[in-house]
Image 1 (cartoon, rainbow, N blue to C red):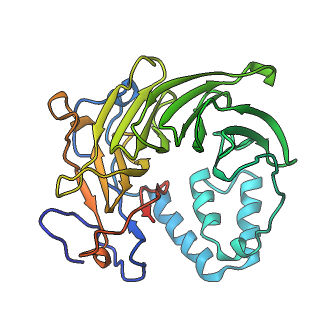
Image 2 (image 1 turned 90 degrees about the vertical axis):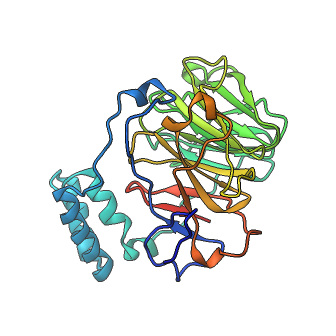
Length: 330
């Protein structure tokens, strides 16, 4: 691939992707600098080299992809059941790459309860509960196995709920939301599920707030983004104000209205990728967002597939890291 002096692009061949889709490599940690949240201060950079079991895992993953046999899948599942199949990481990658298994998936149930379009669904960290948010401004927690509602509440937003997530280590009781009214809200569900929740506004974007993401190394820190080009990072132990705020700008130093945000899983939440009204994904190292450049930091990496060069009308609406640090943008 070719790249300009202003942009850094992944080495992988992007010719198989459409103009509005990018599969992008992760940004790596490169130093120890000031950070936004206490948990991140103690984090150490991780090596990008694969462990020996990862190499073995890659071979096993390739075998599953190539053979796609039910016998191979049953063997892996049996090993998992008896606790001899290796790490959960290996199991996840081996099973997740199986085309044979994907073709066998079928709809289990339909969850009915919202009266408006459903804009977001997200598992709680335990995987036992599914959270949904809707244009009806309600948040519902589901027992996805039985199809019943565990808890439902009015979010307090005055616009469509675009995202709802449960904070780690909260037992699924601490819910963060963002919506078309620009508000970022924090709700605490009552223990045992009785009575209304306590909700409060943490901050407000000037325009719609589309996405939230939770820092991978923290049970308290998360970030939001909005159409006002602003990224805000929060620490729920101090809700008086965001612990970090900055504006996203492209290589032409024009503000980018943001539709998506994602923390890198490879460096303890020190890098954040954002995307929106620009064909590029912008990756920021929050340790480099210092007081003097708070509103105008420079991205440490700008990712853009060559197929989009010369077409600045394309927008990105979603980005997501894999557990290996690969970044997918659409």
